[in-house]
Length: 153
Length: 144
Image (cartoon, rainbow over all chains, first blue to last red; front, side):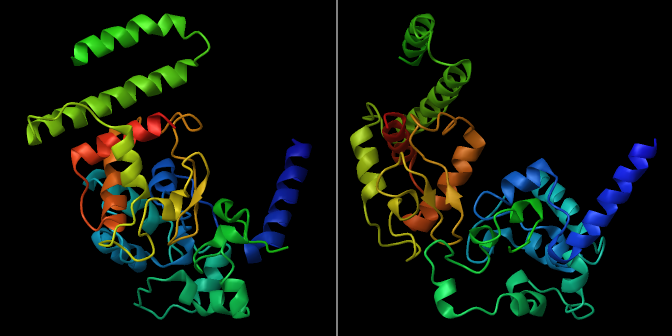
């Protein structure tokens, strides 16, 4: 019992220490698979629920791609993303990102959030690295990004 | 014809002792997907005889002009050797090899296969692929 309490205290402390570079990871298998088939499955905490509604409303034109899914799968994914959105759960990096989202706004790109831009002010050759391809390719540098860990050292 | 193939496949199975159960399950799932594309190809053209790995390879390597400029060819993401890991030319996400010899789970889930052809054909060819093209492609990859 005592050990459990000490362990819990330790876990809470270490989670808080990481809070700046951490978001709750995607835990839903369907979301991991379908949202992760062309890009990393972005954690819902980076956008407010309104954004996820907008994204799920137009999968036929998903940043220029046809990402259409069967209706039942799309509905389940929509539920997960909106229930775990940054303005709903607000854990870890979500707090930092939500601060920049205007009330009622529904941004589509995580990479345009000032919280992102501030941390990614690099010379252009960094973005031109063939492994990077695009700013949304978190895993090119944050090797544990898909686990919600955006620690960069 | 299909029934004969299935019987032959069943008959040869016990001799393939080194093959894992998973790979065998994958093979029969892949055969079922191919049989479905074969039926569609026959319906579209009664002269359809069989899929061709060679046509599949041509499809794989052709530089098409109608799709997304970032993906003129299948090789844009999958590299010239389908046994290699690839990289999504738009998102940078790594892609597992397409060659069945190194990735036996390829082409074993019909819904996933249809979804991927739907997206990739649009992106590379700028149109949907025919059942014949899909069957040829899988046949090529099954031999790789």
